[in-house]
Image 1: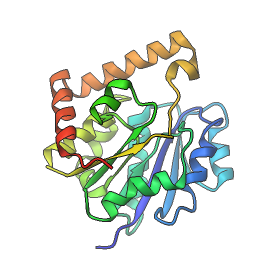
Image 2 (image 1 turned 90 degrees about the vertical axis):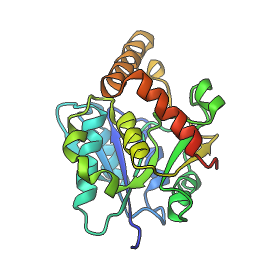
Image 3 (image 1 turned 135 degrees about the vertical axis):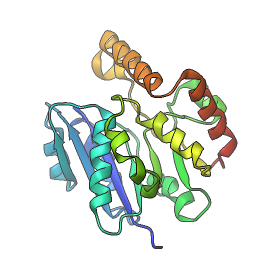
Image 4 (image 1 turned 90 degrees about the horizontal axis):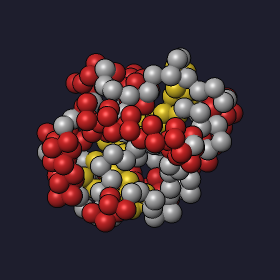
Length: 231
């Protein structure tokens, strides 16, 4: 079966940063389509993405990252011939086409079933153990997600990554961790202010642990550490 890759980028109020991400993804020789899901933005994110040449799906009101990614996955599944998806966060800085090639490579070359990024500014603990288990940058097969489309849309706003980890672990898939030392993602405090950023981080943690227990999250980290070829 030939491989076809759709890049899905959920975005909320990322007009200042999304063009840089799209510059790396659009016209990439291994990416067949780029879909931006504008999740109720108020700053012109959708217009910036459309001007760059991306396909844009608009959601209103803001529904959260899980729902935005579910909408993007549904659009990717509807496209004839799509076999894999790449998920990217919209706020990455320092991203180059070569970084995307590195993330796609292990899956395209048959060395892993799934690839995950490890950004240069990932939390110190994740860099120390070599795994960012809630990274927003992944390449994986659509067939992993097709049986659970309804569950994806019903997840808490920030429950998707740990949900995907559970699917990957339960399926016994091989995982590649791809180092992105020059790529960064700004903290929520930097984007929203210290207090609002702290509230957003706490809400994200609560959503994660509404999706899986802390013990299950630890099991996921141990699985990803053991399953990974480090690249």
